[in-house]
Length: 187
Image 1: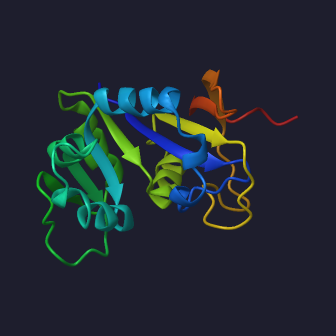
Image 2: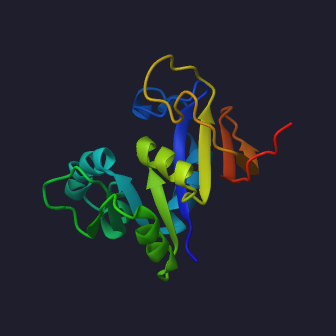
């Protein structure tokens, strides 16, 4: 069965918004390999509306010599939205309505293929974690406090996770992989 996997750049204070503003000083060949491996492991993307609109306004116009244009444009794209009114114009894009998301994503996971990757789409990741639909959460935790911006987790949100793998990059970035865990027993 395929897995739904989210890979996010995140600051020490939990910010996932606008990583282009703080992420690049930490990007090196090690991180490039990790990002490349994530793409090789996936043949589909799951996107929220906002991320879809951002990506669809940029990637279709990029030539093959701009990494990772071929991957971004070639894979199947599934857009989870109940608010997008315009037709999906980016090639290989399919809309998934918010109604009965569990059944739709379970059916998608049962189809043959590689991982279904999520890049960005923090609200979608939160929702999938809340619903127990995310199989792996891969965080590239950057050693920087951004101070403001959208955070991955909301105040009061509790989601038990188990650390499945960890690696420290030469830049001080922590590459952490979490999987869903049962809720701890009350003390």
